Length: 367
Ligand SMILES: Cc1ncc(COP(=O)(O)O)c(C=O)c1O
Image 1 (cartoon, helix red, strand yellow):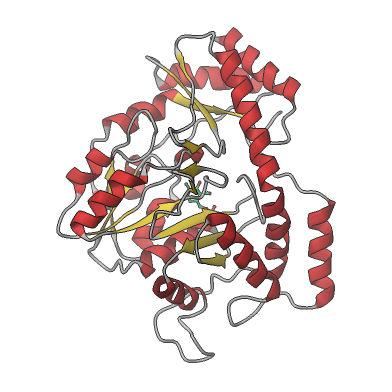
Image 2: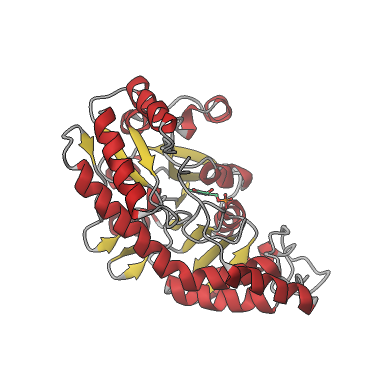
């Protein structure tokens, strides 16, 4: 089976981990050991901002950022429902109310027009997601945020290598949250990072990561233990160097697939954003005028032929039992329609060119 995503780990990562283990320094109670500190310096440079705060998951990154943005009980956060559930968890963990808002069917990201309508007096944060690696259209969201005095926390978990207006994804948000989970464009196994240009937010994030402390045993706020271990940072440093080649390989595979799939008119193919770059974390097509049954049948057939095609996300978060029961029903027509018609094909760097051709031709045949 060709899985939808697979980490690419080499001897360099193995050696980096062994070196850390031999050094005897595996973590730091103060928040960042030497490896984590170096990783943060390099990651901030990659993200085009002043600060990177490394943590142990992307979910932790999101939670800390939502808290640092000042979300408290009763505050509303505008976010898509068409995302991985962690985006919403972060809001609820902070005590906020998730206001699930519809997407633009062209980009699968938050629709700025829908966001404008969702703003109330209680809104504190807009939380766009760079879904599939498409950098969310931040300019109109920044305008809405400025008008209503809101912060933007960008979920860039899937966006390593994506750019918008000449800058890395996340660079125009107040804070951007990245995941380094095993499936992502670069990985540390589990891991996450918050990036920001703000000194003030960076100071808060450092405290939140380690028990609300600036100095040991002197918590100044409610904090957590979200620290990244040294071996993860060692892996991250190597993966960050390899990232451009990983993304180039994903881009080449995506281009080839799009050429092959152009022969089917019902299939809507993904494109690069205008004035920016997709990260190609997921190559997601849409079978127009289909329903979930037809889409799922194609996925089953692809799997029978050894191709791990998957649908992200079959269940939008607002329809999941916990969120439906806790926050009530909401009609999100574009989200619901897309969740029945989209599916993703493997383009990760461990897929070969021949396999890409086979994936494209197999799908064309099935259609
Ligand atoms: C859009 C999105 N947000 C948040 C997360 C959570 O990241 P993690 O799994 O590292 O906690 C992920 C990845 O799993 C994701 O894809």
